Amino acid sequence: MISRIGDELMFNTQALELRARRQEVLAANLANAEAPNYKSRDFDFGAALRAATGTPEVDAAQAPLRMSATDARHLRGDAGDGLPVALKYRTPAQASIDGNSVDPDLERTRFADNALRYDAALRMLNGQIQTLQRAIQNN
Image (spheres, rainbow, N blue to C red):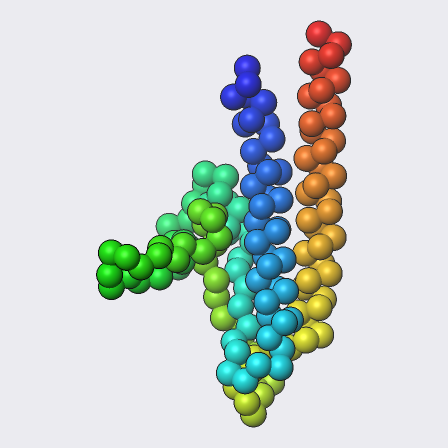
């Protein structure tokens, strides 16, 4: 019974975690908008959600990011806390002289859009929990 409840909540839970991860990536882009040679990064949310919910695409680019370790004492640098997120570089519409590829207006727009979608996913998850709670109480 408990595992079925977990399965019901899994999709919105994964969506919420991925939205939070994407918010971190977009915030890092905005924070480095003035840093020379910084390259704007993002990931395909739809592909990451499919991979997180168990319907992965067959694509090597979707593999989680890992840092190479040349010594056993090195820390493992897995990105995204196990989430199947493959960060990609964004191609700038206009090249910058200092090599920075962040477009602040575009990043702010995507940050605000992702924040709205995060809020929607949170409301949906909260609604699911309340529905399950009512069903359990009325049983």
